[in-house]
Structure formats: structure tokens, C-alpha cells
Length: 497
Image (cartoon, rainbow, N blue to C red):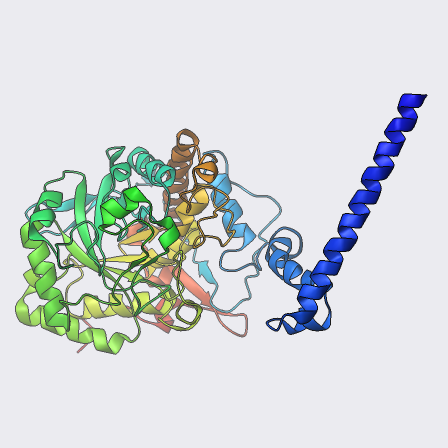
């Protein structure tokens, strides 16, 4: 009995202490809030005003899990993410009871199924395609769908390892991103595309320029199949790369040539390239030194300006052309970029892609320059649409981030990614188990390719690159749809007289 009374007294004292501490904390917060000058709400409504900030921070998570409908969220909605998550399991990815997609929204693509599609035994897989016929070592690319640039540093060691092993398993290429070639890109024997950013990370000399010696050495690596000169990317055209200093550890610093904790800020463009002539000169130089195919990645502001590039190629000869052009839409992604550039600058991929395809074809360079589409293309319909419009390949970064387990927490720039993908915090990286994730990366790539081939079969052709603009209709404002070849006809040399 005495022990019970003693326990009750202790609990009562603890309760009083907790209440007292709460009162003292509230009083302290009241004084702090009512005397500070930075927040009008907290000054006018001490203590209570703090809940506004808390709810604002929590709002994005509540909306994601409780309030947003499957097709409402941005930049990727729940339906898009769920398709990727299911695809990573390598199992049946069918759904029941009809589409949840609103097919009356303007811009929605609808594929034109054939009355008499090929029989199942007439179905063919996508053929490999040669890139860079004038390089000493052309690249025979096996897959229409590949991994876009994500730098080591922007993403974590286990994320890069999982992408490398997944790419090797699926037979697709992996773009290194502008952060240079790390050991983790090479943990598996996958095909690599070395991206050269404006800071020349991994290839820079003492002055920050391009080192031919380093370029030549990387060119001898049998895994490095191509070089991509990065002019601009979708989320921040006109601004260079931004790697926050908290992500620059000793290893990242060594690979990039930075100091530990120093933010990796790339120039907004290549200092050696002032015009299209300089661009072709740089492409030719890299191709000559490395022996590998070379192209560039950019965002289109106006297709009119780019016509001068194709005129110059014709003037110099097809050998001077880039081996590929990667078109990133203004809606493309990155871990860190100013909001005005993310929201307002750069032509969306759905407008930019057909414009550049048409320019290439009008100047007779269809068989010389390969077009790679990039920018928010994560589901089979996105990839099939791009190929219908003339893309030879499609690459995705955020789609493969979802395959690694990304939950769209929007913490990429803070080194606090809860899934371990975009953080160098060892505690958070433990959540990303490479042995599990690399299989999901491969399954996702294979699912995309299989379902794009299924769409191609449905529209009446035997493989995806035989799809044309007439095979996809675009929903208009009144709810009706028009074949894309009526909206923007493909260039036909026989009728362009």
C-alpha cells in the first residue's frame, strides 16, 4: 500500500513538473514572439501564430497523402508514381475497372489503335541504333529508354551503384551527369555517357578549362560510350549547376576538384563557346580526342535561332554535326534551381521536341543526328508520345529516382532526403539497399520498353520507331482530338517544293 502511494506521489509531482515546464515554455515563447520584429503573425498572435508555420510545412505532406486526388499532384501525380512503383516489382502491372485519367483535358495524347494490328508472332523488339558513324568508335545503342544525367554528389553513393547495376542488368545506358565519373558508376559493366558540364568536372585543368589529357584517358575507358556536352538543362536554362556545399564531402570534392563544403556552382555556359561555330568546333575536338560520339544537351527557347546551327552544319558538311541532340523541356527537373527558372523559362518538351525534329529533318540530317527526348517522361505513354513525334531515344532521371524509392518529398537540395537518394547522410543512406533497388531499376526500364512496344503493336507497327505522328491524337479545348500530323505535319521532302 505504501509503495502504491509513493508511486502516485511521484506521478503527481511529474505531472505538476510537466505542467509547470509547459507554462514556463509558453511564457518564454510569448515574450519572444511579442517582441520579435520579423514575423507579423507571431508578433500579433504570440505562441498561437507559430502553428501557422508548422501547418504550412506539414501541408504539403497532408495534401500528398490525404487530400490530393490520384491525378492532381505536381510535378508528378500519385498515378504516375504508383505506375513506376508497381513496374519496379517486375510483376503484372494491369489495372481494373477502367481509366482514372480525364481524357478531356487539352493536350492529352490518345494513341490510334489499328483495325488489324500485327499478330502476336509478328511482334518485333526494338532494333539497336548506331550513334556517331563518323567517330572512331561508334556506339550501337541497344535501348530506346535510358537513364538521364544524375551526378554523384547530387545523388548518393548507393543510388549511383543501384543505377549502374540496374542499367547493366536491363541493357540500357547511364548518363553520369555533370559531376564527373565516380567509381560507383563503374560497379557494374553498364554503358556510360559522360556528361561534360560548364565547369568541366572530372575533365578540368588547373584553369578550369577542358584537359585533353584527361579527356583522352576517359575516352579509352570501354564503358564510356559517348560524351554529352551540357549547354542547359530543363529546370534552370541560362544557369549552371548548383551543388549545395553540405553535399560536398571529401570524395565528391576530390572527383569534382572542389574543397570540402564548397558549393559546386557551374558557370551559366561554356566560356569557350560563344556561337554555333564554336559549338561545332568543341564537338569536333572532343570527338577527335576521345574517339567517341559527341552530342549536346539543351533547352529550347526559340527554334528560330537553332535553324542557324543546321545551316552551319550543311555549310561545313555532315561530318561536323553533333552525333546526337538531347532536348530537355523547360519542365525538366533538378535538385536545386531558382523558382523563376523552374516555372517560367524554357519551352516545354511537348513543343520543343517536334520543332527540333522538324529542323533536323528539313536539313536532311535524320540519319546523321539522333534526337534524345528528356524532361518529365516517366510512363509508357510519355515515351511512346516522344517516339511518335520523332525522338530516337528517351531518357529519364526522375522516373529512375522513383524506381529507387523516391517519394517526392521535395528535399533534394537539403541533404535530408528521407529515402537516401539525394543525401550523403550515412544514416539516411542505410535506407537505400542496393541489392534490392538495382533489380527495381532494371524492372522499371524493362516495363517501360515492353509497354511502349505494346503500344506500337496496338497502333499497327512492329516496333516503336516505326510509329509516326499520325498514330497519336491530341485532345483539344472542346474535348475532341486531332491527329498530331494535322497539328504539326512532319517534314516531307517530296511536298516541300
